[in-house]
Image (cartoon, rainbow, N blue to C red; front, side, top):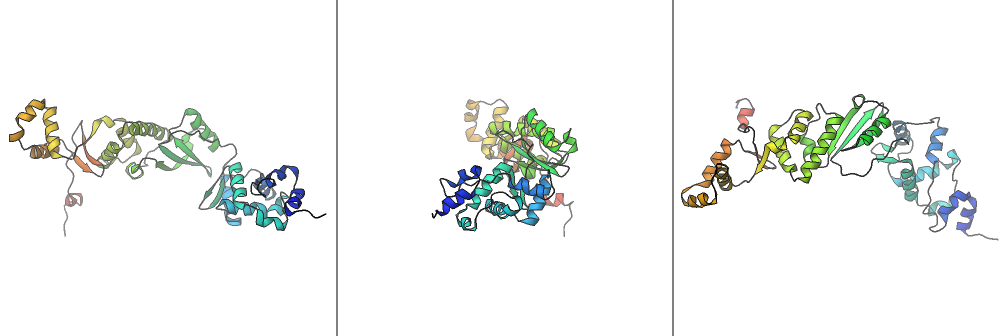
Length: 315
């Protein structure tokens, strides 16, 4: 009796594997636990993410789902798992195999290959994020999305096997808001301050004040993360203003007590453009890439001219 190719393949598999051959000619194949078996055969009972990375980078250059799928099938002779007849190879969807195994392992692709997350590392809940810290400790890394709850912070410590975040290194800090990566320094950053910063950034975004914060950062040029955090907390000390000197002049008079009737009365005999320009200088208004900004508590000092920044030297 002659059997079809799919029937022969189906009969070759153990029952738990046959489910992947039924509706889509092996395209829904998911190979589970092959990599853990491979690592055990290699003498690594509980490999860390770094060991996974080194082994897979030097051994099979796994950087895509298709690469991983082919690796799993090609190493079947080593693991003793899921050995397929040669005639089945053209029908295998290697990308599908790799994608499902990557999800099962909780792995991610990096320029160095596939990195397998530790099984005990919890996945953070989906929440609006403002920052992403990469924490490292004892050759392990952990991506911490901020703001984070106390529970999530505790999970990060548990994953890194530390009792205090002072035992970890903050390898990088990234922001979802544009430009903040270059405006906020990393000096003196801590996980606790970064979490507070993330909460401030969420509030600034909600209130539409991110651009004002960026403008203030550009002028203030904080030298530490702590200084940048203090600015975010005291954001009401800054004001984005109209780039119209005429309108600024009118607003300055309103702040002095003039109402619309007074402004209308002096309209024909007042140079509001000149008044606005002089008031901008007096109030320390500074031009930035994010608009004009002023500090309410104490006017910004005048911007230095290029020759002043160079110490007054000239050729």
